[in-house]
Length: 68
Image (tube, rainbow, N blue to C red; front, side):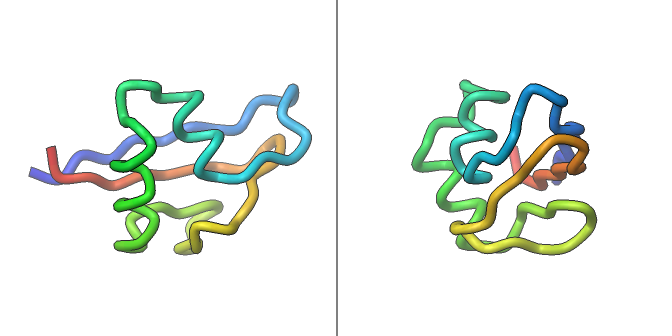
């Protein structure tokens, strides 16, 4: 079953690598799992698939799809 998690980046975040934001917002995910999701292109920012080196900032919509 594919699970979809969505988060709107809060105003307090100026600019942060997407990997760091995900591990802070959802600490149960773990860095290795987050890297795996990014490598499989299962992370989207504002509806577009992103690479591991992408950044997020206030107001962005982050969506993560995972099988779990």
